[in-house]
Image 1: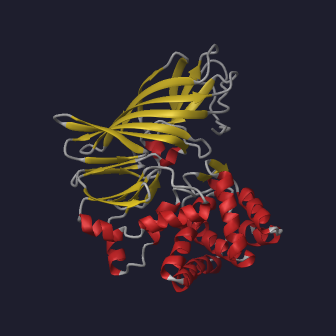
Image 2: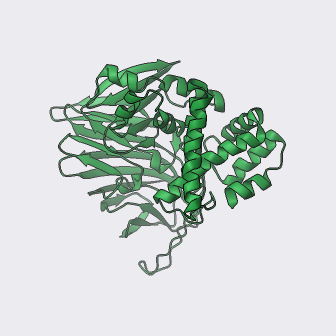
Image 3: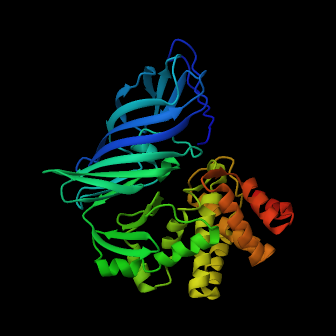
Length: 425
């Protein structure tokens, strides 16, 4: 479990000054009930965490949720400040600490509702619908108990443990036994058709409210081969017994153990069976992003450029080098366009802002730089470096220097000039 420094500028709301310092969440136990008709949620989360003994307060993100109750034998008092919940701790206490937080509200972001189709799914901003520690460099396990209307299905982070049926609702219990960052927690609820597949001892599940089972199998035909490819390139087995892909809504988002795809994605794949980049991209995040995670958004390219590039690397072995080169030409074209507009910049962001141009840098310049690095090193050294980097930092947090050092060690080559030109400049 990582230790993180939270620097918070809050003053005068308690009688004495507060020290927020370090926060290490160990486990979340979440009970959540999304109301699809009203676009609201009710939640209760038990957070087990550790902080230094001298620390007198802790801060969690709560979006615009209304905090109903905060309980725990180590809680002295609490208040909200903007999108943060501040909890003052008692001086005499034993670690780990446990706090129970009840809340409700209407998420502004992070959870998308469609009352007409009776659907809801999450995207990225977990801190908008669940009280949590919203820093990248903290991993925690999670249990999710999700209440949905009778007749609907639910996908959640981790592995399904139990479904409890009642006269008017269903409760899905999900559990994830390995730690991941806050933004990987999510859910998807709807009236789904289902298809299944297998790769080794892992079950693959495909869901859609519109496509038939046969169409789902066609859409995600290459998923088993992709999992095998990413396992080969990392030497790391996919960590769960199941992987689920859900076609619904208007976004693409990886979460731990599953991914959500824009409902229009199927049309592009059915028109051209080689246009499966996004299947590979979201799956690649189960390694690069979810488990090998950028320490903060300054190094966001280590999440996204790897997902873009590894999807194209799969294209190369599955469809041939022409498809790979076509992908790289697209990334270079996007990058060249940014250069012409005077928007080229370092892959390391001083402060990340989620604009289209910044994404062009992190995703596509980043992927193009990985291609150039492969050319610089040759295939053997490049893939050796990728494997050693992935294995060394699996389950950990990374900065760009960590990737550079791994590639230098694998290739026995000084890459400072390359990284200065293509990454830092």
